[in-house]
Amino acid sequence: MATTQDAKDSTAAARYLEVSLVKRGVTCRAKLLDDRAPLTCAAVWDALPLVSDVYHAKYARNEIYALFPAFAEQEPPLENPTVTPVPGDLCYFSFNGTQLGSQSYGYGSGASLQAGTPVIDLALFYERNNLLLNGDVGWVPGIVWGQIVSGLDDMAEACQDLWRNGAAGESLSFRRA
Image 1: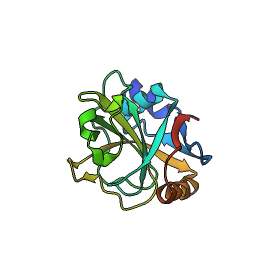
Image 2 (image 1 turned 120 degrees about the horizontal axis):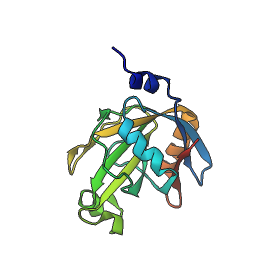
Image 3 (image 1 turned 120 degrees about the vertical axis):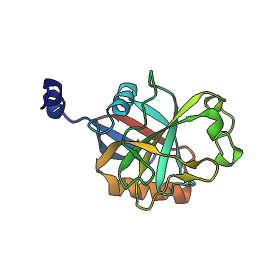
Image 4 (image 1 turned 90 degrees about the horizontal axis):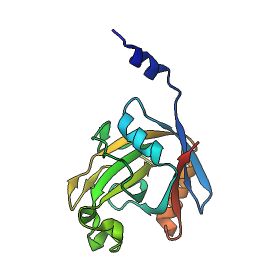
């Protein structure tokens, strides 16, 4: 039997955000998956806007992402997990600084990568055939908390440019739409 809370949840207005590569001037629109990852969506939504340097994945293939200091009062559990994200998925990962501290990652030794300090990775997957398997740590499940609903083709083209020509000086931005 449905409860009053279930009825409220099913009629709640969808929430959207814009994801942008700032320097390249490319923006896409995403819907938050509040019904599948409510705690993660709430944590991200409450922290917006978020902007940081962008990176292109080395291991997962067709992924761009940005790293942020932890922003949730309590880290969300692994809700709506995947190790095979599809085009348009927005994923949330939480790492401690030592997990990303290897020189092979190329992040340097910034304060956000200190032992025991949580680092949040917000990622956008722009093409197929992704596998979240890292040679250093094994499987890295992510929380799918959003889905691109418009602008993915332009974003994918910009991501390919980022891969081929470099990410230096580029930022990834998440803001409420």
